[in-house]
Image (cartoon, rainbow over all chains, first blue to last red; front, top):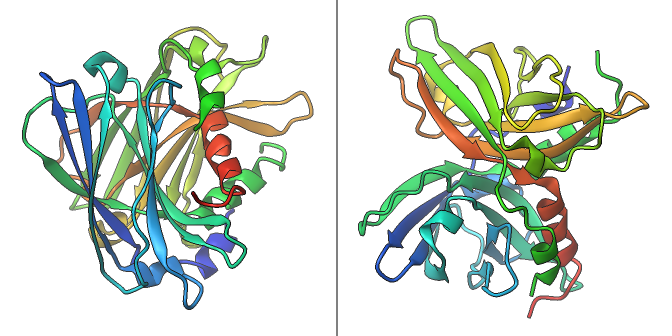
Length: 155
Length: 155
């Protein structure tokens, strides 16, 4: 059915380690971008630096929702260790989805995203502790493969 | 920065309730698509039925990875209650990402997806119990908004 996927199946998927904390008193949501693992599975073009783009969506005009880490030279494991904060009420936060993408800048200065994770914040915990987790990164190739399937009549 | 988001911000986001179970003995991963909530936030065209498309990605040719629920008439809350199963080893499952999209069929018979959730299966539990959770659905409008930003040089 989706046979084109098979040929591009990487043996190990790349992952991003993220941490979250919500401080109820300050109404502050903190996102820790900790590290990238198995970056060789990203099929990055040679000699490109990679960065992580973080978006808290949907975005409202009054607050910043888009962040980028500094660029790192591509290695199989990349220590990122950058922290971003958003001022937001708990109720609003639970309507949000976090989109995290690994990107690189093309020669012409355009941002190209290779793979990403999407995290629903519907049940984000309000503990003061930082919770960390590894998330698989889905290569954008697979997203567009599904989208192309939209052009085929449903069976 | 992303001011175009603000005008399209729905007051309440739509959500999908999903359940998962992995049976180690049978090496079987079961996905329960339970219900959709706040579908009015999907901005569905009038008189269209909606269905849920579930993909376990990346897909290998030897196993089925793409499933669709039956169509439902659009209401604010839609009971779906459909179950899909995938035969897969625990190690392979933990490399996968689940993509869940709410879609409708256009008049010409093409599948159009309105919003989706993406769930990393990196730490999927191997309990025999079904775990259920609500996931926020991110409207595809926001995804394409970010993609359009790729054409702007990085600041």
